[in-house]
Image 1 (tube, rainbow, N blue to C red):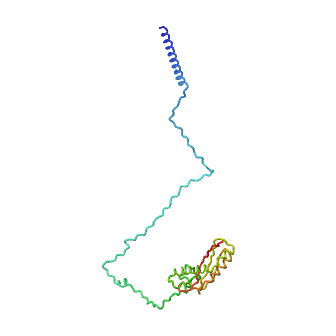
Image 2: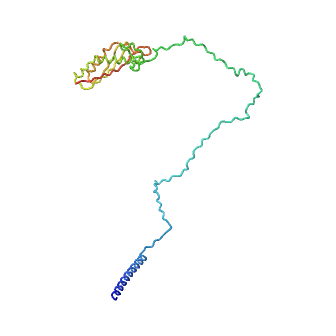
Image 3: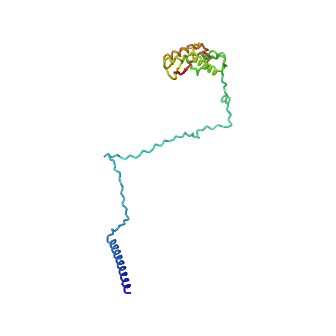
Length: 248
């Protein structure tokens, strides 16, 4: 029994020691906070800092001038007639010279004599000396195209006939003899003169021999019916491209 009592005494003494230790620590913490805390002062006034701009002053004073007011344009109205200056006319008064006031004199004109009208001949109109094939009123007619009626049909026939002559007479073996390779382009220009002959043959090609051959072929074109503009024969310029490939 005594052993049990001794154990309870020891246990209660340990508990009391722990409680006392906790209380001491708590008291020490409270006192530390009271004496070491920094007082906080709350102020209702707020400090305001304004950054003033740095003035760039050259040392010269200027006199202030008031801004000028905009000029007001005065609108002038038309003068109003004075009613006192009006002339009153009696409505019942008869106009004695009304016939002279309202008579329309007929305009006299002499009849035009139709024989006196002079017609302007086409010779008085300046026409260009040479017209392009696509701009002339009536294109030159290649032999064999005379039976066609429209100008567009004759133009198409003209081109087809020329291509056939070139394909038949142009020596395409010349390119291989000259050592040329690939596709060759020759640009030819000639004029169908007023009398239907071929003149002013010009050509441009990669080799002088091709230029000479192109001129030779075009010179063999037959005489044609010349182009017409305002019922007059005119010279017409035609451009002909010749393209062939050298077979190596």
